[in-house]
Length: 413
Length: 200
Image (cartoon, rainbow over all chains, first blue to last red; front, top):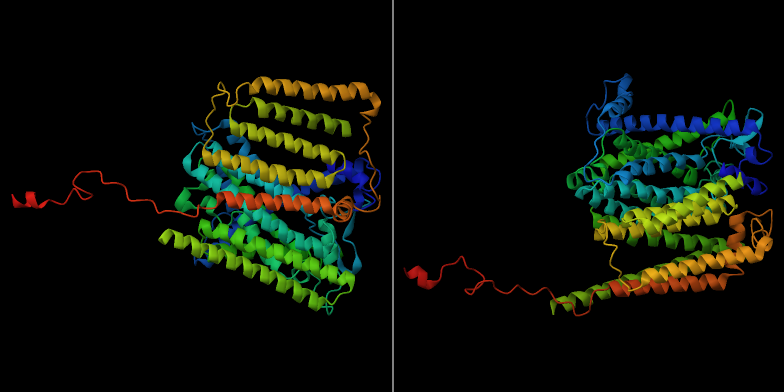
């Protein structure tokens, strides 16, 4: 409702055409319908994702995996969920009760909200703008298209930290507390890398709105067969940084030090049981699905793709699902193949590799665009910029090396 | 609609602010601060300042309060503090006085200014161009009109970072921790038998 009110003012600039004019009851009902559909879709997608992950991991480990409930064990998650509902809700004696109850919701609400800005369908082929007709109104197949777009995702991921942090703290137990201290440090530091790689995409697309990003990536690509996706247009570096940082932000293996079973029992949700634990569990897998959708939107053109036969909006949904599924498989593949990193390795990767790399890349991209606008020689400018960046990096390494040698000498003497 | 959102947010902001001051548990106080900052973010949205709202959430709720909570957890300040002792003598009286003066100043502006002070308009100045997006306008202004202020702020932050690194640096003449002095008069290895005892 708030977004609706403010988008009237910004309607001349961008946003969903549904909310551009006068808002009557039909439009409100359409928005509510979209909310309900997306809510249901997210729940089903999460259920399937949990099953998919268990099944693929067991396949990769030569096990059978869930196979009893329903065909191929597809209803296993449902059975687990029902079991969670009927379990006793344990409340630890030393828990801070109010915060203990609040924490699961702080995790699960951002997980649901995050999907609102993802365009999940629509016809983007042959210069269409992805809008569809719904009960006589033109609209996008996404819940909200605010002008701030992808910044909304960053804001939500910074709120999601609270759920993990407070869950660990309020449990009144040692291992969850260690877990939540780890989580807060990890998620805050990887947010910087995440934001900087998003910055590159924003530079290339020239907009913050997710719909605008998909529009910028749709259409005729290079040599008319390589799609005009940001993964190529922004260089591969932001994509790789975003992929790594998103895995760390989601606390997924190999960056799952927050819930490292061997060290911390179960991590921040050790003391949780029954439906409260289920909320954490659902949020975790829902975030995986949403993060895959956001990666697809940012770097792989979202629902953009050719419409071969039949209605274009259906093809949009098809391409979107295909791309998301590919990323979900990649996530599970990474999880089952790479061993967990050490905490200092995690922090080194975040602060010493990903952040400088993505920062340097943003500056290089900006240099390229300035050169293009000023009609400078692109190759020379880029080479000069890269050389400057590398010189700076070399000097930094030299300084770090020297200081380390001096420190070691001081210790030895 | 706008008024309804404003009233709800104002209630959240105020109750959060009261919670910050009244909570006996530091973590609860920090959480109340989050509620206040969040309410202000929604108020920004209500005024059409979307970028400001998101920056408010990302920077204040997402980074600063998380760091406050991080320190609280790391130091284990989760027991209820003793509120009877005052670290600075007379700070409570001064705090009440300053609070009253500030509230009085705000009230005075509203009462004296009447309609001129509270107009209900979205902003004092209109958007520079109604057809260009909010964020684009802010970006253009930052890097043209206000580029000097931007660079100065960047310099200030860099100085702060350098200062933090300097403070957290290890001292130059770092000594390895010395061996603890021997606990017994016979030296560090009391289990070995002396030659005298061996003779027996």
